[in-house]
Image (cartoon, rainbow, N blue to C red):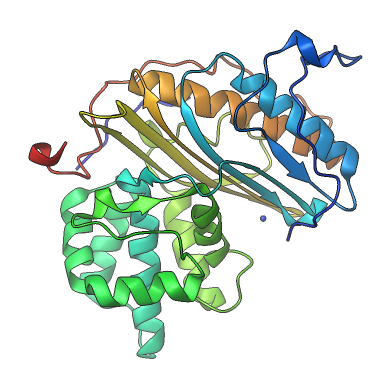
Length: 313
C-alpha cells in the first residue's frame, strides 16, 4: 500500500507550433529562452492562437528542467492537442493501474455481468490509494493475454507489458489513449463502466493528489492516477495522468518523466506544466476567475510507489 504523498478531453493537423518564448504581455524574442528539445508541438484548426500560446507556455515551464519528458494534452472542445516526445518509453510505475482497471471493467462488460466482489474489493484500493497488493491480484487475475487484448482494443500499440506490472513500458501518447477509454472513446467501455472508473480516479486520496491537478480551476473535477518510482538507472520516474471535467469542460493531461534527481523534482516539473495548461485552457474557455496559486515545487517523502519489487529496482 502506498499513501505517502502530500498535496499540492480530436486534434487537427493545423496550426502546429514549436515555440520557446518567455511569458510576457508582448512575446520576447525567441533567443531569450533556450529551446526545449524535443520541442513542444500544439495544434488546433479552430483555435490556432491558443495552440501558439500553450506551446510557448509549456516550453517556458520546461526551461532549465533536467527531467526527461513525454507529454500529451488534449482538449476536444477547443480541438486542441499538444505533445512532447509522445512515443518515448518510460517504466510505467503505478499509472498502469488505470490500464489494469480498464481490463477488469472490459472483462465484466464482455461477460455481461456486474463486477464481482473480488473485482470491486481490489479495484477501489488499487486506484484510490495505489495499493500494490490489490494491483498484483488483479494483474494476475486478468493475465497477460487479456491485458494485451485490452491494449489492442484501446489502440495502445506502443505499450509493452512488463514481467511485473510496474515495469510495463508506457508512452505519453498511449496514456492519452488510455484516458480516452474513460472519456471520448466509444468502443472500449460502456458509459456505466466509464463512470465507474472516473469515480474511483476522482476519489484518489488527498496525499496522492499532486501533479496534473496542480492549478486546476475550482469548477472542474480532477480524475487522476500517479506513479513514482526510483531505479538504479534514470533515477526517479514520476508520472501523472489527469482527466478534468466540468459542466461544459473536458480535457486531459498525461505527463511522464524520468531522470528526475528526486521525487520532489519530478513532481515540480509536472506541476509547472500543469499550472500553464490549466491557466491557458481556462482563459480560452472564458473563465476569468482567479485560478489557484502556489509553488509548483513541493516536498515528497522520496519513497517509491512499490510498483516494482525492490530486487528489480
